[in-house]
Length: 288
Image 1 (cartoon, rainbow, N blue to C red):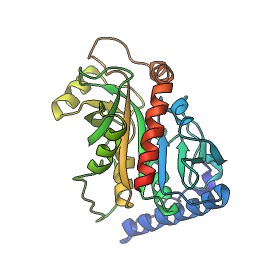
Image 2: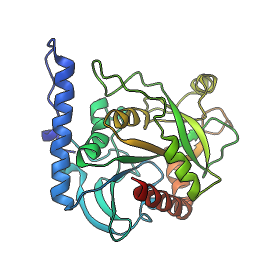
Image 3: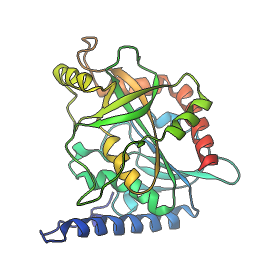
Image 4: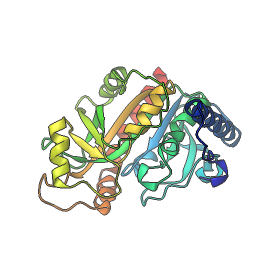
């Protein structure tokens, strides 16, 4: 994503919070307009492709048009192996298409929470009503296993960061839409649900941190999603999240954790994930 599209650092003023919200909104509007020009059509549903999901994204449908993420104001090419750097209009059926972001910005990249939230804010400004988030995660709950997809029912934000500023109060009671989770289960009734904990990263969590997260009620752990989901809800989007278990979290089995393991799990499950993702996106798009 281009540095030219970044919001500039602000000096402290009595209205700093409202100024930051305005700048973030303006940047999202500019990015949305650029997407409309590049992709040539409107979309109702956005999909963000996370770690382990790249191959699965190919199953959603044929690409109608695409643009390099770095050519859209405020966006950056992802700096993580296994993440793409494109935004595509992908056909769902003859009438509908999904807005698919192949890659995301993470907090650990150092650009701040507004950069993390920019994709979902852009999707909302573009006219989307729904966002489907995907990620790769470590399993804390021993009943979960690598290769399994879990619907995120709630989250615990352990990053101490948010893209919301000032008195921007948002009800998160049903952040991960119960309606959309029920809809996803019509595609695969075996889908389980869990609570996702986001850590800042980029280091993987220690066994002690995993024990802490378990005590707090987390079933899954990763380095994305929570900040995006809150910003999406604040922007008026209905949120669904699919989390691919790529490994057991640190200390659960005693095995080491690596990013290569994350990518390998996604590759091994690509065909099954693709069928599931395509079915859910099609169902959600029809209901949007």
